[in-house]
Image (cartoon, rainbow, N blue to C red; front, side, top):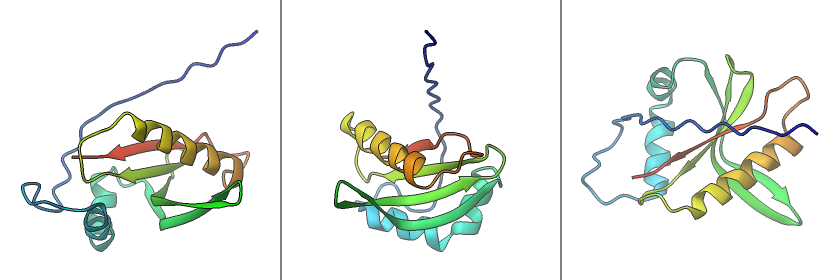
Length: 122
């Protein structure tokens, strides 16, 4: 029986789009990224294609909204960005994993690699 190996990479990126000292909300982070999308994509390595903002996806007759959805051309996979204007909470991982599963089952094509998830938090 084959076992699946899950790889997790944690890197810190300093994306200076807004003043981190001011109180902010997730929508402001999202607005800042979208309004500075070209610089953001370059900062992320230049191989990201923007797919959507508040990307709507359904599961069990409920709709969910992925904060930002990208496609990485080099890795040949979708990348889900979940934005949090607060410190990390372990429950964020469950939400991100659900979004990744939905992208993998509803959007990803057979030729694509599995979806990657990134949580951006304070």
